[in-house]
Image (cartoon, rainbow, N blue to C red):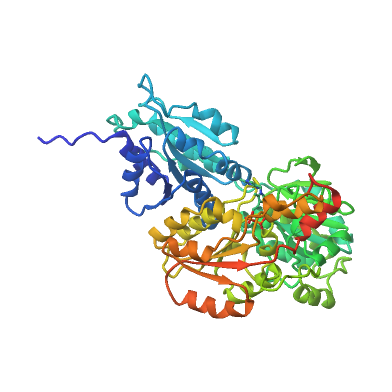
Length: 565
Ligand SMILES: Cc1ncc(C[n+]2csc(CCOP(=O)(O)OP(=O)(O)O)c2C)c(N)n1
């Protein structure tokens, strides 16, 4: 009789991840994870993206989740592999994105190991959860627990397993029972009818109502219901930054409230009487707490918090699923008024629809130096050239204000995770979205990022090249850290230390084996875009923009004094 050799623990651990439905890992190998990661990579249907910095593995995994709705996995080695994660994890925590990070731990039976560090407190300090897998018989329980917490509590979980244990023989002869078996099926949360009745009264009486949609609308599949409700009560529509484009196809959609207000958006929000926010936690930057304080603010959320980012989020709270709540409020209006009978709303007009369709987001004039572009003009040219069904990935910094104003692009094709305010993630997010679209050589993917932000993790251009991903990287190059030099200037402080010059990104691209162009004229964008589309390589456009154009949010900050945005 031939005895089959026992499986190693890292093998059954890899199989458990597959059983959990994971199809993609973003990895950087080391002693602590390489056995697991290489084994997982060979399992059927698994896609592995080897990145060049652990931070980028986690950042890419967050974007993969946003782009697919599927739990993403990152894998890093112990010690220095884990310490690299402390900037990437908080973003996923605050955006409430589920993720499991398979991390090694230093060998538990070694007397000395130079990469040892107490990983749990590092990870929990970021707000992520840590599961330490230290018992061999309980190993599968740890995996299940990690996935359960990640999915149920919507947060990243780091699973740390000492790598000497990973290499032991597995003693389990039971099939792995997935976390899905334990996921409580609680159904959708229904609102309190008395509170719904109050909301109905206010919407019926409101002349100038606005409805803001957030990610909860996308998660609940409530877009159509929210639009129906807005149409019924004559409200304008708006959306948060993570759902940029949610109502792009509606003639009364006024874009993003708060920091990224258009001039017209600010005007209508300043005179709104009722603002109904559905499926958004109403963060400081969307903030009714300091932007539309004259309005009665109503929040529909499955977990309203009241005190949010140091301010009162709303005046009335409806604790409910976005779809159920939108339908209940709509039904309430119909019951109260009778079907078809209009509410008091008068904010919608032909003239307003025309203004929404035609007015620039920010009409403020600036003197532009010859040879440089107004970033608003450059963004408009990109928006015109890039087909509307392409994925857009947003970086951060001052330049992100312009990409917030793209038009006619659905939320499902826009990815950014900005909740921790860290710059330098755009390229990693683009890796995540490229993987989400299975790296198709026909990739229809554009990253728009600042020069400083791209340079944070420029090494990932090698990942792009090695994996044969195709993306167009548009660098809004203002020659420095725009967020900083605009604020320093406003305070009358020498800005020269925030100005680094204008790196030749087109040459940097070529150094990595990619294509590159410098752009100083918007008129060449359509032709360049056609050339890019006709071939399979990634390309960087070094778009030389003026450093004189200050974004509206920064102008507001300057007006109010720093510290608040
Ligand atoms: C990790 C991290 N380091 C530093 C900062 C501070 N910071 C905010 S914006 C910014 C400038 C980014 O430059 P760039 O990507 O060129 O965009 P710009 O502001 O010039 O448009 C910096 C350094 C930050 N937010 N996150």
